[in-house]
Length: 420
Length: 185
Image 1 (cartoon, each protein chain N blue to C red):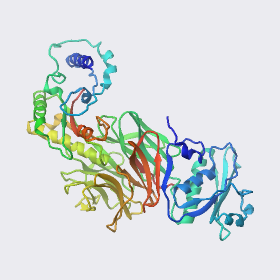
Image 2: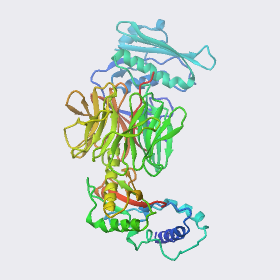
Image 3: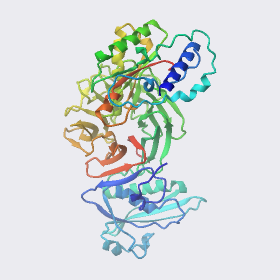
């Protein structure tokens, strides 16, 4: 059912990957790093070094050095000959091993990150895990390396959700940030849109048309159980969780035009928030819970506004151009990403909340659904190439771009929260 | 195609008379409408349910054809098309809306769902709202003609249920549409 693009499979272990990565631009200055193959049994489902290398390479901030020429690959600190790695121009080196743990059936994974220039260890950790956790552990290792060397938290161990349309069926999928390990959350003959992660990452709210009209469901990712959050007369859509998880902002129509409402996470206590006769939709809470950003055409064209969850006057946020929609705040509260239409093209834009300068981050023309990674550094969005929906990731400064494509027609991505 | 339509109409007759389980049909597919350009009519999805339903006994008047399904009756026409970025019901669709309003006023037990649609350009949620604007516009015309809101639910499919998939003006025009669907259809 899933077909792979062969180009990248050469570098990656044969694991169930739904999304294949194509990197189309890199950062100007990349850190040269060598990730030496870990000592590990050939029968294990993942190669830790390969997963870590792919994560670091995909970030665009690292230049992965070839390690095959090195005579004896070190797996422990004592085995490292720094001059060997300095000769390869490496600034950093990663070594490690996977061994059977003292506990039957489990594995012990250990790694070291070394500064080749200063010849000192920078980080190291040991994990006691089940074989099923091996890939996630490799992502965690990549996150530690990323943070140590860039000063920013990594997001390799996070998850994304998206909707895939294949033929006439729609599936809501949760996958690793690199597209690995895709899990079907919902399979339906009717469209699914607007998935939204709960702040703790255990639930998804989404809009399903299975009842022949848009209805909001909340589904637990741990139990698979779900309930109807909102099925009022008319449309029920655009769910957005409050940062404290207690409420959601949603859009209802009740026989009129789209308006924002608030509702408790258990579906009780619905109350209206906006009352204009225009379209108000696409709510998104600020991380401090003080504002809800949203799209409204009350001014004559769709623009981004914000309103306090307590009500009151809405303030206009975007003033350039005649179509600005789909606002998403960065988790650090500093940036706003949205979709801007200019000259018929729909493109991802980003702006500092405190500033006014708008940067267009994409060169495509049918962008939708931008969503920040939990470190506020990357934005995932849906776009269209050759009549097929694909996902793209771009760094918030526009310098690194990745394209992820799966068989089918992918849309509505949302990046999950940070993992611990 | 004609035979199938005829079969569906006859079937609908029997079922309307019996007031038992109704066959679910997708009216969008069965309706012929005025739009220009290419239309691909889909097969009604419920065709496979038909055999099971024919065993229901026919009791009273199976004489009159259900006007809602009669291809010679304006009531079988269910789609109103809109201009780009607009939600005004154009003059050419007034007669259609008036006919359905009249039917609803005469049959106060009947209920409709007005399903709004938008073409695929732009945000899905905003397009859901644009589609909603169109279904509300049709509802307002019906309200003026005396129809009570209790008989109307307005919903939108936005860009999610397009009738065609081309990225062409002709296709987009077809998707800028509100459909009238009666309860039980």
